[in-house]
Length: 264
Image (cartoon, rainbow, N blue to C red; front, side):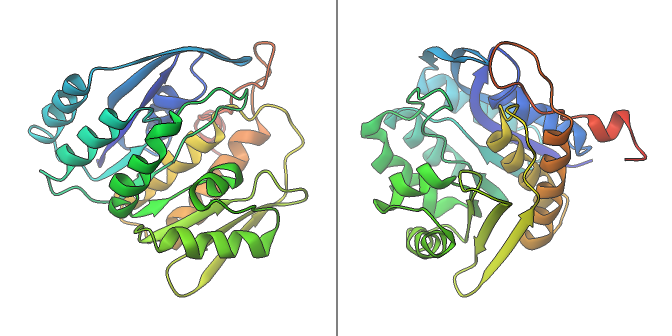
């Protein structure tokens, strides 16, 4: 069995963050481990408070895992402050990390800042160059590039610009566009497009966390980047199709649908 590590924040409602990552790892039949960067008071209606974990404790969590267990892939999610970003980058560089998927979580669906504005430059300078693949949605791509991203051509231009900042691959997610759900992968020379039919549901809590974790799990199992994304895209689409209407806001996706219904 492959071992996957998520470095991210905790979601008390269980739909996103560390909880979504670990569910996704389990659904992909890999062993999940976690480094918690922040604790959020969160529900389907939004994020109400954040408590960042002490950088020294984050460092110790990473060291505890790497010095005992082989790590075949890593997903990085919510890293809200400069010190958190710096300690993650510095500590990971002490080990032979690989298959690093960075999901540049910046703003929650409810509009809560999950990345402090002053930490954006640190994210770009420290973590982007380390990433195997970066997975921004359209608002995150706009924040990173400073340009408007409103259509397919904008996505391609943004992907090229972000790639110049260091990640080996850039996957820009087009979920905020109208029509089919279209994502664009850029490898430095060519584009690959991934398109699935848009699912008509409000229950999309944790979709970004889930997709990036699925990509990391597939990379950890030895799949190529193109195949890893293809399989992750199929997984998140099924999870959205069978999402849950719990709570008073956007509900979570069904991470284990294919395990409950193996013939699906």
